[in-house]
Image (cartoon, rainbow, N blue to C red):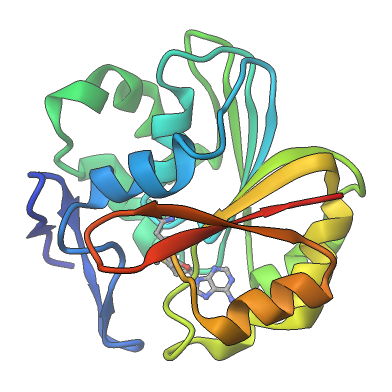
Length: 209
Ligand SMILES: C[S@@+](CC[C@H](N)C(=O)[O-])C[C@H]1O[C@@H](n2cnc3c(N)ncnc32)[C@H](O)[C@@H]1O
């Protein structure tokens, strides 16, 4: 696959099946920082579900400056995981990326700050059922867009994710579409506006009651 440089200098890819980039072309790294990691206030020792792991930008940014995280990544496509090995990354996440590159072969790594990242490969709509209830503090929810992949954004999947979160746990996503927020509300999430990054509309943060 061919790396595509986004406006903040970090790289993404284009998915031919969904005809969509893996990240906002306004900045792949920026999107991870501003749409997911910062608004979710990550703290040491948290358990994080990275729903649609891709190149793992959200996970790698979460590990920066943190220790003892337990990150579980769900991903269906082993080709994108293989790309982690040789991905060019900006200077600011280069140190974190050293051990992260081994994910391409090992599917489970621990970095020098005792952050554990474990991948579960397969369709996230199914593999989510393997996870424990009331276990996660945070969820990065990052499938392809609702228009391209509506099955990922259903009330049913938000209900499943809700169960996996601890009370007070939070989910981040880049979409603010009305029907997505409705599905999240039906799953019992409290809905908050996320930050506006790259596009004109805000993302969405859901909080478990
Ligand atoms: C928008 S990209 C995610 C980008 C990623 N969070 C990152 O930081 O690089 C969407 C990802 O979801 C994955 N995906 C699509 N359908 C999936 C499914 N049913 N189960 C698990 N992963 C899926 C794709 O392979 C792709 O890597």
